Image 1 (cartoon, rainbow, N blue to C red):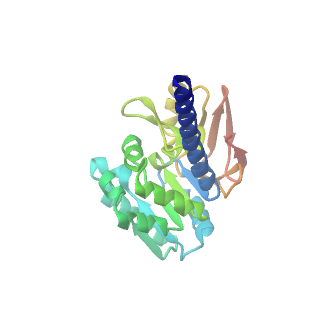
Image 2 (image 1 turned 90 degrees about the vertical axis):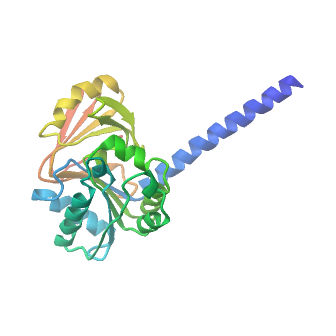
Length: 261
């Protein structure tokens, strides 16, 4: 009897683990059907019109519903100014339906109005700021589920600086000087933004912490886009993207394509 009970418990435990694993895989596959734009920072000026115009095109053009998430800028009370600047930028690019979503903490990430606004979006742009705070705010929240559902329907998910960092399996928290788990839309990867200014200085330290991961160094005023279920990414903007993999560095210029995994 005891053996039968133990076997039954083991079977239940295995089934639960398989269920959780399958759920994670389903979420990842869903997002792979949408489009993802990762940007290296200094996002509202210079050559950033190239990746952002491309994202708008993928989202449906000037009438696309664009939603801005300013949460990463909340710790230093910069979220209102950052959101206003982002909205003005996209309107300058010709967007007609831009909204800053008031998602700034765990409480607002659970609000039904926030989830509704994000779930109906064609393009969701996550601003930069504090990556650890951003990841903790979004992880497992109704707002984040609404984001993945929007992308599942063919939408575009864009993130700049901290907004790009948290989308990977790992991110580097410069405050704690530690590697932390991201939202894992891009597995076995870690984005290093501002690569051409100060980000490149993080590379060696990060390599020692997660030597198995692919490090993605993105210059400021530069983005990389993956369209739909494609494995290839393409560089847009004014700088380059550096891929660090197995002790080697590869550099890709605007227009070039490459695979991360």
